[in-house]
Length: 472
Image 1 (cartoon, rainbow, N blue to C red):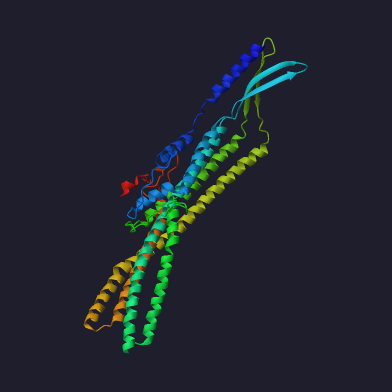
Image 2: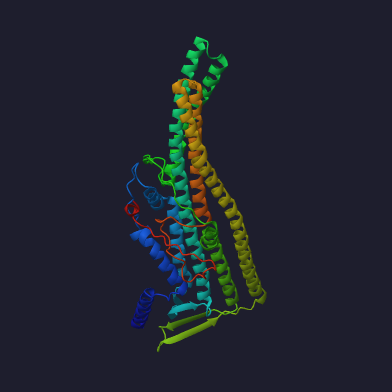
């Protein structure tokens, strides 16, 4: 009897050990999710390790700074690992429940019956596949959250990059303006002593000089918060060393077509993509709700090793989904969630069109203002300055008039620098955040995944994470 118990227990233990090495069948959604994740992980986190960051210098290109930010950003990393966990959750969701080893005994004065056994629960047909469909759709939503984090990080970096460049230009022009005001103040002071200049003229120039000094001090003081913003955009913690600041700013030469950008926005905007994934998850949830009408099953086998011969106790059971009102409520609730997700998507599409119109106007307006300054106002100011300088050399124009004209030119150049920066930020906002067009070194999928219905105005991004050196 003891030998029978040992043999049966050994057989059950071996069976449980063999089953522990089993693998379930992957669904199509799980295969696609793993394929997409491996494609991105191979470039963004190969071997679950961050690739070597590009070395940054003041002469580094914008693409180097972007690559550094995207690889080093904790927000992007957090979204990436959220996506990774959601991919693994598909496997967990579509897997069968673990089998169970059971043990039962009847004891009076002695053990009269000793029954080790084995039991397994089986969800009704189609239930696991339906639940896996929900998990796969939710995982797609996590990918688009990762894509949104990448685009937000790229925008933050570009915004901080251009603002630092603008500050350097503002400081240069403000110092030139202060030097001119100092020169003008000295000239008018000398004229006032000689009686050829009025005191109000001297006081006016002194007031403008003092204002310029205060503005220069404020600009110099603003470097620290701008540098901290740039540092944060690169994913650097407060305790880390400050990064090198760009020696010059790269300006975009792109002139995007508004109609094309709007088409791309509806095809690539990550917020819309995430909401479409929510709709797919809700649709899959409807299937799960209807599958609740299907019963679940369980099977078990026990053996009484005390009996001679050994008695076997097979057992089968089936759940009875009798609560029709509960099943109907689950189906109606799932349908309501699908309608809500669809409505949210439509509302987001309307908001996108409105947002695009506003951002597009801001971009066009700054472009027009920049063209006016660079093509009309600044050339004419230079021409006027040359005329005034010629008059000053022959004595027909005084020094104050010449310095006033020089200050006018510097003010126009300062306005042009500010407008140029506003245009670059507006373009980054329009292309990155609204249209969802990633930069060339973004670690994103190269095209629309094949299991997603392509929109009528589909656009395939060709972005790949390339080495920073290839961008120079």
